[in-house]
Amino acid sequence: MKDVTQQLSNSATQQPKPAKRLANIELSLIRQINALATPLSVNLGIGEPNVEPDETLREFAVRAAATGSWHYTANPGNVSLRKLIAGENGFDPKSEVCVTAGTEEALFSIFQAYVDPGDEVLVPNPGFLAYATLARIAGATPVAYELEPGSAGVPPAVEHDFARDGGRDTRAPRAAEWCVDVDALLRKITPKTKLIVVNSPSNPLGSVIDGETLQRIANAGPLVVSDEVYREIWYDAPPPSMLGMSGNVIVVGGMSKSHAMTGLRLGWVLAREAVMKPIVTAHQYIATCASAFSQSLAESILSDADWNRSWLERIRAQFRTQREAALFSIERELDATIPPPAGAFYAFVPVPACDTVTFAKTLATDAAVLVIPGVAFGSLGEGFVRISYAASIEDIGAGIERIGRWLRAAGR
Ligand SMILES: Cc1ncc(COP(=O)(O)O)c(C=O)c1O
Image (tube, rainbow, N blue to C red; front, side, top):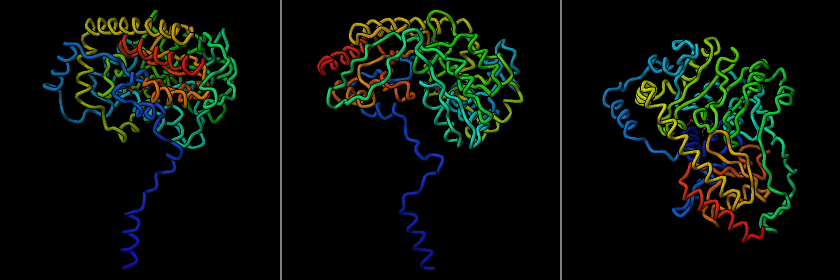
């Protein structure tokens, strides 16, 4: 009896062992860089809109709080909201739309519904870091497909002693139009490939994939997850959607980026009924349902089509101005010309430092500016940093100027 009590008390003081599925999974580099922020830092590492709700949006929120239900909704969300999300796209609100606690939960539900240990998941490199992690959590192997800088080409990364030469590198900055080599992607499909993940507009590249390429991926055979969370943030033309391209396409989206609602956790999945069923089952055991408040708010927003159109136009105009400010400073301070991002609010910028993790951490502590090392998004991101221009014009100018000043002081 004494032994058992002793064992119980020993195990209570020991550090509990995390599940094997979390082995080698840590908080993302983005979180690690953000942890270095001080009150003096200029934050160009941020992945959310620098947009505040206007009066109408606040009124919608007040109405949702005052009149909306505080109870569970149906697992896939209120049908009235699902109707608005389905729109005129030919998806059945009852069985082909599921409202989720943000796009992230939508992705998690899909991976839990479809990915088994031993499967392979094709993920973009560079690409949003959650995809590979979600594959690993499900016991699968992420297999990277490359996004290649088009015409200009990227000089190969070179071994580089950051401490010795302060980040100097002889590689010339270059313009890089990132695109998917779809033939190379198709060659990576094996009998083990369960999912192909596509993200357009891309985090971290700001690039958009053309409709023809998307259709070829849709026709490839495996299930395709199209992450369209940045779909409403575009500059010259609306990005093509994969919605309806094939019965095996699952589209995810949400209101985090389009309506600056990152904290309200409102996303969705659109898929054909047979594909959707297991996703709703997984979603039930993860979240039960998305927040009833956020669902009511989303319903008010999507019901007022005129207001919504003008809101989206306004935030696109704001990001367009911020994009111009970022491109101007990047050229002037960092001596780099990049093609204007077609969507989202990120510039993926070549920098004369190969070890961009050390570079970004040094910038955070020595120059008080936060950017995300490109390698956080995959091996092909090495040699780049992601600069978010979801920041005020002043911060964009000051932050990029600090990077330039630091590089010049380091002898570039
Ligand atoms: C490409 C991409 N997908 C999904 C998400 C998650 O968005 P949400 O806030 O809707 O969960 C993000 C957030 O940064 C993202 O960049």
